[in-house]
Image (cartoon, rainbow, N blue to C red; front, top):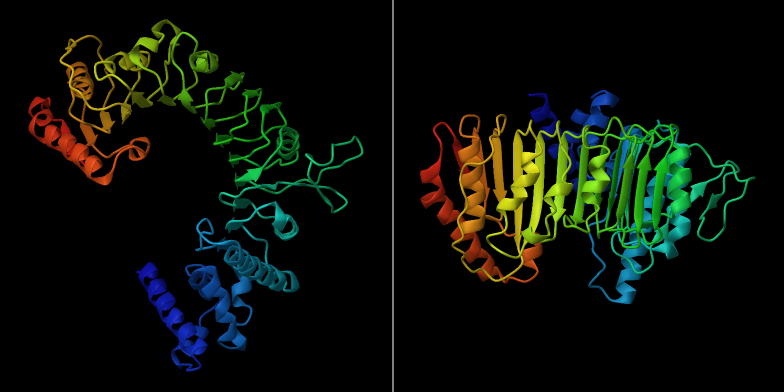
Length: 465
C-alpha cells in the first residue's frame, strides 16, 4: 500500500513539475509539500535525476530537498555513435554541463554522504578534466558505489589514482615513485566500462581500497598481465570482460568468492583461494592444448557454480583433464557447436559433479543445420541430485535432443523441471536474418512440444519459452 501511495505522489509531483515549467502552477504541490523531508526524499528518489533536481523550482520549501538524495544516476539517453562530429560535441557538452551543475550545487550545499554515483555517456579522454572532477567529488563524498560506463569511444579515459596531496595521476603517463602516496578510496563496488586501467593502477587501486568488494572492468586497453594477490586484498567479486590486450590473469592468496572472465583464450592461474565459490570463464579451449581445466584444478574442490563458454568441437574435448568438481551444484555450459552429433561428450563435465542440481546448456549453432542420425545410449551415469535442466538454443536436432534424453534417463527419479528455450544465441544473430532466426526458433519450439514432451518422466514439468 505504501509503494502505491508513493507511486501516486511521484506521478502527481511529475505533473506539478511540468505545470511549473509551463508557468501554470497548481495547488496540488502544497499538499505534497506538507510531508516530512524523509518522505519527500523517498519520492524524489523514484524520479529520474533530472526531474528530481527540477523540483527545486517549485517553491522555497523544495529548493534543497533534492540535495538529500543519496544516489545520483547521470544516465545519458543519447548515443553518439551515428551522429556527426559537431552534433556529438554539442550533446557531450550538454551532458557534461548537466553533471557539473548538479555536482556544483551539491558542493555548495551541506549534503549528506552519497551512497552511489553512476556516469553513463559517450565520453573519452578529452573529457578527463571534468571526469577527474566528478571522481574527486565521489571521493570527497565517500561514495560506496561508483559506476562509470563511458561506452564505446576511440580513446578511452584513463582511471587516475588520487594522491594524498589532492592531485590525480595516470600511471601510463607518469611512472610511480616511492614518494607517491595514494589516497585511501571509499568504494565498495566499482564498475569501470570503457575506462583504461593499467596493471599497476589496478594493483594500487586494490591495495588502497580496503572496503572494495566488487570490481568490474570492461574494455580497458591497458590491462595486459593481471596479477592480484595478498592478504591486504579484500575484493570478493572480480569480473573482467572484453579487455582485448590481456595476456594472463593470476589471482592468489586472498578471499575471492566469485571470478568472471570473458574474453579470448589466455593463461589463467588461480591459487590459494579457499573461499571461491563461483567461476565463469569464456571463451575457452577444452582440448589437449587447453588451460581452463588446469586453471580451475587448484580451486575445483571449493567451487559450487561453474560457468564455461566453450568454442571447440567434441573431438577437442580432453576428458582426462577434467578435474573432480565435488561441490559444484550449478553447471552452465555455453557451447559453440560445429557438429550435431558432438554435444553428448560435454556431459562428461557434468559427470564430474556428484552434487549437481542445476545443469544449463546454451547452444550456439555455428554451421548450417544438417541432421545427423548418430545415436547414443540413454543410460550411462546417474545424477542423484539433479532437479533442473535447461537447454537454450534448442533446435530439436539429434544432438540437443540426445542431451535432453540422456539427462532425463539418468535423473528420472530426481528431475523436477526442464526448461527449453529455442531463442537464437546472440552469436547466431550476427549471421542469420530475422526470418531465418524465427524459422529456427519455431522448429525448436515445435519439436519440444511434439517430441520431447512425449518422453518426460512422471512428475517432470516441461517449460517451453
